[in-house]
Image (cartoon, rainbow, N blue to C red; front, side, top):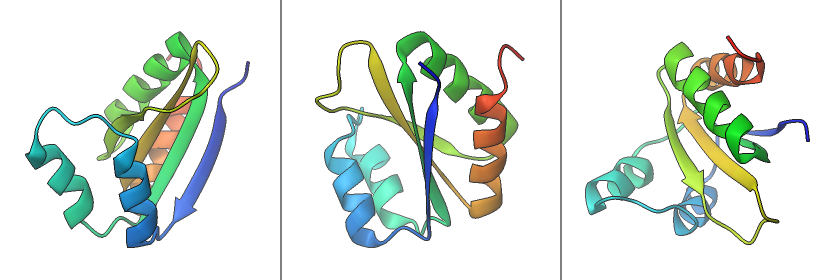
Length: 102
């Protein structure tokens, strides 16, 4: 299964709130960090577990972004990660995420 990517430019507060409802946070501070900022873009990357965790790692190393797992009712072994940041950082992170085995 190839990695699927959707980029939301200038996400609305409603979009951020909907995404937050599907994220697990270790504490309230993490949730507030997402809700309190105005994000230039959010990328949603979807694929199999191993691919997405490796892709998220590449994305985090390549750009100043915040990444959270989206929890949902996806088929088994499919994961979605949300990549938050300014537009250029999200684009760089997605490009790095899609490069295999760097």
